[in-house]
Image (cartoon, rainbow, N blue to C red; front, side, top):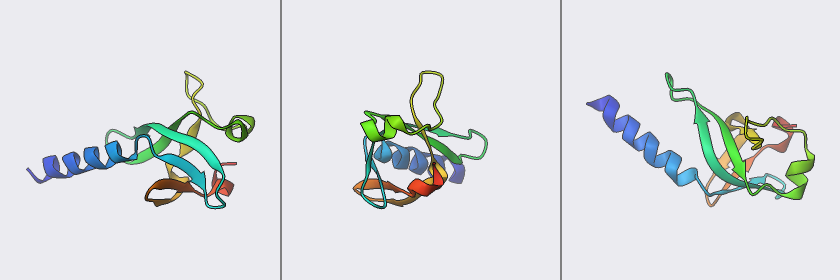
Length: 92
């Protein structure tokens, strides 16, 4: 029963992240969170899939998925609020 409650809370948390604007701590806009990739066994968040990437983001040589969506490592996230704030130096 406890595991089900935790999983439901995690689902709600991930839904709240979808659509948030991704910015660096210096204020550069990267795009928006379109999806989240996670490890199914542990629930660990691995990557954010960017939608509507900015021109700046498209010029960076970042990891991409099979559909050529830009992937941002979730480990680079330093704050979550109105925006997803990432440490740009952690992704380049």
